[in-house]
Length: 192
Image (cartoon, rainbow, N blue to C red; front, side):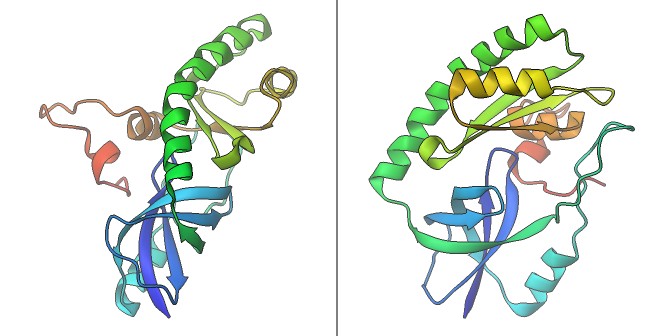
């Protein structure tokens, strides 16, 4: 069984694919993750020592002090479904455009709820089966009514994810003080 490191989702989650298929670096594949069906980019093959190192990584997702604790591992197991076809790649391209419009609409829908949250980004899953809304907030937010409005508007499952400021940089990108792309949005997966 071959093992490969893969990157998936907007927050650039890490996953390990164990499969009999031969994958190459930069292959784009459809995988089954804890989030559902996802597009993943193969980063490379792993030997047993490298796999152990990745599995030993701690999840360093920043959370507000009183935010709910999430026990997601830093590296998850992914199940290989198939190589991404033009249909999935086209869908992914359309989602990038559509997600900008969805984010605008989400920002409009949050106004009447007067929630103390900063909306950062949205992510559609393959087949429009789920919509992730990433936000930051200094405190815990009761967004149940807001989620009902989102579900009514977009007619899909909605999942709100509270993230910290470093993870915000990881998702939206930007330039670091050195003038280059932020390390966390390009290659860095662990924050010290």
